Image (cartoon, rainbow, N blue to C red; front, side):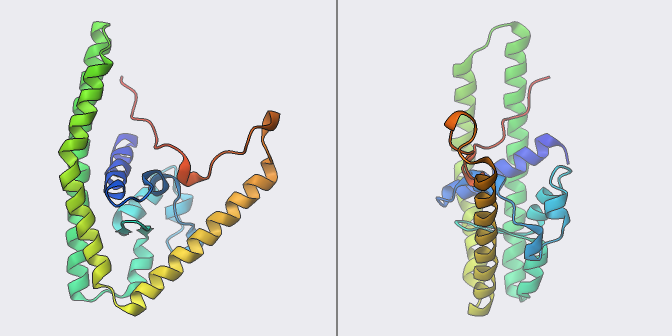
Length: 208
Protein backbone atom coordinates (compact mmCIF):
# COMPACT_ATOMS: atom_id res chain seq x y z
CA UNK A 1 0.00 0.00 0.00
CA UNK A 2 1.41 3.42 -0.97
CA UNK A 3 2.00 6.14 1.60
CA UNK A 4 -0.77 8.19 0.00
CA UNK A 5 -3.23 5.31 0.23
CA UNK A 6 -2.28 4.69 3.88
CA UNK A 7 -2.74 8.36 4.75
CA UNK A 8 -6.06 8.46 2.94
CA UNK A 9 -7.26 5.35 4.73
CA UNK A 10 -6.26 6.86 8.07
CA UNK A 11 -7.89 10.15 7.14
CA UNK A 12 -11.12 8.31 6.34
CA UNK A 13 -11.04 6.70 9.77
CA UNK A 14 -10.21 10.06 11.30
CA UNK A 15 -13.29 11.68 9.77
CA UNK A 16 -15.50 8.85 11.04
CA UNK A 17 -13.86 9.18 14.45
CA UNK A 18 -14.34 12.94 14.47
CA UNK A 19 -18.08 12.55 13.88
CA UNK A 20 -18.29 10.58 17.13
CA UNK A 21 -16.18 12.96 19.20
CA UNK A 22 -13.26 10.50 19.34
CA UNK A 23 -9.77 11.99 19.01
CA UNK A 24 -8.96 11.34 15.38
CA UNK A 25 -5.22 11.48 15.91
CA UNK A 26 -5.47 8.70 18.50
CA UNK A 27 -6.71 6.37 15.82
CA UNK A 28 -3.79 7.22 13.61
CA UNK A 29 -1.04 7.46 16.19
CA UNK A 30 -1.90 4.92 18.85
CA UNK A 31 -1.98 1.40 17.34
CA UNK A 32 -2.93 -1.43 19.71
CA UNK A 33 0.12 -3.42 20.89
CA UNK A 34 0.75 -6.82 19.31
CA UNK A 35 0.55 -8.43 22.76
CA UNK A 36 -3.19 -7.78 22.85
CA UNK A 37 -3.86 -10.79 20.69
CA UNK A 38 -3.69 -9.11 17.29
CA UNK A 39 -1.19 -10.37 14.71
CA UNK A 40 2.37 -9.17 15.25
CA UNK A 41 2.32 -7.64 11.79
CA UNK A 42 -0.12 -5.01 13.01
CA UNK A 43 2.59 -3.63 15.29
CA UNK A 44 5.93 -4.82 13.96
CA UNK A 45 4.95 -4.12 10.36
CA UNK A 46 3.90 -0.53 11.02
CA UNK A 47 6.40 1.00 8.62
CA UNK A 48 5.49 -1.44 5.90
CA UNK A 49 1.78 -0.87 6.27
CA UNK A 50 1.10 -4.09 8.19
CA UNK A 51 -0.66 -2.28 11.01
CA UNK A 52 -2.77 -0.28 8.61
CA UNK A 53 -3.86 -3.45 6.81
CA UNK A 54 -4.71 -5.10 10.12
CA UNK A 55 -6.76 -2.09 11.18
CA UNK A 56 -8.47 -1.97 7.79
CA UNK A 57 -9.53 -5.60 8.12
CA UNK A 58 -10.62 -5.22 11.75
CA UNK A 59 -13.49 -3.61 13.59
CA UNK A 60 -13.66 0.13 14.30
CA UNK A 61 -15.83 1.27 17.18
CA UNK A 62 -16.50 5.04 17.16
CA UNK A 63 -15.49 6.60 20.45
CA UNK A 64 -13.32 3.60 21.33
CA UNK A 65 -11.04 2.82 18.42
CA UNK A 66 -9.91 -0.21 16.41
CA UNK A 67 -10.20 -3.89 17.26
CA UNK A 68 -7.86 -6.12 15.26
CA UNK A 69 -8.98 -8.84 12.88
CA UNK A 70 -7.67 -11.52 15.26
CA UNK A 71 -9.56 -9.96 18.17
CA UNK A 72 -12.75 -9.82 16.09
CA UNK A 73 -12.37 -13.55 15.44
CA UNK A 74 -12.33 -14.10 19.21
CA UNK A 75 -15.73 -12.39 19.46
CA UNK A 76 -17.27 -15.21 17.38
CA UNK A 77 -19.78 -13.02 15.56
CA UNK A 78 -22.99 -14.69 14.44
CA UNK A 79 -24.39 -14.41 10.91
CA UNK A 80 -26.35 -11.22 11.62
CA UNK A 81 -23.36 -9.57 13.25
CA UNK A 82 -21.08 -10.65 10.40
CA UNK A 83 -23.48 -9.02 7.92
CA UNK A 84 -23.45 -5.74 9.86
CA UNK A 85 -19.65 -5.95 10.11
CA UNK A 86 -19.31 -6.41 6.34
CA UNK A 87 -21.69 -3.51 5.67
CA UNK A 88 -19.56 -1.22 7.86
CA UNK A 89 -16.34 -2.41 6.22
CA UNK A 90 -17.78 -1.80 2.76
CA UNK A 91 -18.95 1.66 3.81
CA UNK A 92 -15.51 2.46 5.22
CA UNK A 93 -13.85 1.23 2.03
CA UNK A 94 -16.14 3.37 -0.15
CA UNK A 95 -15.37 6.43 1.97
CA UNK A 96 -11.65 5.73 1.70
CA UNK A 97 -11.82 5.37 -2.08
CA UNK A 98 -13.85 8.57 -2.47
CA UNK A 99 -11.43 10.50 -0.27
CA UNK A 100 -8.48 9.11 -2.16
CA UNK A 101 -9.93 10.29 -5.47
CA UNK A 102 -10.69 13.69 -3.99
CA UNK A 103 -7.20 13.93 -2.51
CA UNK A 104 -5.83 13.68 -6.01
CA UNK A 105 -7.77 16.82 -6.96
CA UNK A 106 -6.09 18.81 -4.17
CA UNK A 107 -2.73 17.40 -5.21
CA UNK A 108 -3.35 18.50 -8.78
CA UNK A 109 -4.45 21.97 -7.64
CA UNK A 110 -1.32 22.46 -5.54
CA UNK A 111 0.90 21.18 -8.36
CA UNK A 112 -0.76 23.57 -10.83
CA UNK A 113 -0.13 26.47 -8.46
CA UNK A 114 3.49 25.47 -7.98
CA UNK A 115 3.99 25.07 -11.74
CA UNK A 116 2.59 28.55 -12.34
CA UNK A 117 4.65 30.02 -9.52
CA UNK A 118 1.50 31.50 -7.93
CA UNK A 119 0.41 29.91 -4.70
CA UNK A 120 -3.19 30.56 -3.68
CA UNK A 121 -3.75 29.35 -0.10
CA UNK A 122 -7.36 30.53 -0.16
CA UNK A 123 -8.12 28.20 -3.05
CA UNK A 124 -6.45 25.32 -1.23
CA UNK A 125 -8.42 26.05 1.95
CA UNK A 126 -11.63 26.25 -0.05
CA UNK A 127 -10.85 22.87 -1.61
CA UNK A 128 -10.29 21.38 1.86
CA UNK A 129 -13.54 22.86 3.18
CA UNK A 130 -15.46 21.45 0.23
CA UNK A 131 -13.98 18.03 0.96
CA UNK A 132 -15.01 18.25 4.61
CA UNK A 133 -18.55 19.19 3.69
CA UNK A 134 -18.68 16.59 0.94
CA UNK A 135 -17.63 13.66 3.12
CA UNK A 136 -19.28 14.70 6.37
CA UNK A 137 -22.63 13.02 5.63
CA UNK A 138 -20.97 9.88 4.28
CA UNK A 139 -18.71 9.68 7.34
CA UNK A 140 -21.73 9.90 9.65
CA UNK A 141 -23.37 7.07 7.75
CA UNK A 142 -20.24 4.93 8.16
CA UNK A 143 -20.08 5.86 11.85
CA UNK A 144 -23.67 4.67 12.30
CA UNK A 145 -22.84 1.42 10.50
CA UNK A 146 -19.98 0.74 12.92
CA UNK A 147 -22.20 1.63 15.89
CA UNK A 148 -24.79 -0.84 14.57
CA UNK A 149 -22.15 -3.56 14.90
CA UNK A 150 -21.54 -2.52 18.51
CA UNK A 151 -25.29 -2.47 19.23
CA UNK A 152 -25.55 -6.05 17.95
CA UNK A 153 -22.92 -7.40 20.38
CA UNK A 154 -24.17 -9.38 23.36
CA UNK A 155 -23.01 -8.78 26.93
CA UNK A 156 -20.24 -11.38 26.69
CA UNK A 157 -18.83 -9.85 23.51
CA UNK A 158 -19.00 -6.34 24.95
CA UNK A 159 -17.14 -7.63 27.98
CA UNK A 160 -14.41 -8.97 25.68
CA UNK A 161 -14.10 -5.60 23.95
CA UNK A 162 -13.99 -3.83 27.31
CA UNK A 163 -11.11 -6.09 28.37
CA UNK A 164 -9.26 -5.39 25.11
CA UNK A 165 -9.61 -1.62 25.52
CA UNK A 166 -8.69 -1.74 29.21
CA UNK A 167 -5.50 -3.68 28.49
CA UNK A 168 -4.65 -1.34 25.62
CA UNK A 169 -5.06 1.74 27.78
CA UNK A 170 -2.93 0.19 30.54
CA UNK A 171 -0.14 -0.59 28.08
CA UNK A 172 -0.29 2.92 26.62
CA UNK A 173 -0.06 4.44 30.10
CA UNK A 174 2.91 2.19 30.87
CA UNK A 175 4.71 3.23 27.70
CA UNK A 176 4.07 6.92 28.38
CA UNK A 177 5.38 6.54 31.92
CA UNK A 178 8.56 4.90 30.62
CA UNK A 179 9.03 7.69 28.07
CA UNK A 180 8.67 10.33 30.75
CA UNK A 181 11.10 8.44 32.95
CA UNK A 182 13.71 8.33 30.18
CA UNK A 183 13.32 11.88 28.95
CA UNK A 184 12.15 13.71 32.07
CA UNK A 185 11.42 17.32 31.23
CA UNK A 186 13.32 17.11 27.98
CA UNK A 187 16.09 19.47 26.96
CA UNK A 188 16.25 22.95 28.45
CA UNK A 189 13.39 22.20 30.82
CA UNK A 190 10.91 21.65 28.03
CA UNK A 191 8.05 19.24 28.82
CA UNK A 192 8.21 15.73 27.33
CA UNK A 193 6.52 15.01 23.99
CA UNK A 194 2.72 14.69 24.12
CA UNK A 195 1.16 11.21 24.23
CA UNK A 196 0.67 9.52 20.88
CA UNK A 197 -3.04 10.29 20.86
CA UNK A 198 -2.39 14.04 21.07
CA UNK A 199 -0.05 14.46 18.12
CA UNK A 200 -1.42 15.94 14.88
CA UNK A 201 -2.23 13.65 11.96
CA UNK A 202 0.49 12.99 9.38
CA UNK A 203 0.89 15.72 6.72
CA UNK A 204 -0.52 15.23 3.21
CA UNK A 205 1.85 13.85 0.58
CA UNK A 206 4.23 16.38 -0.94
CA UNK A 207 3.63 17.53 -4.47
CA UNK A 208 5.97 16.19 -7.11
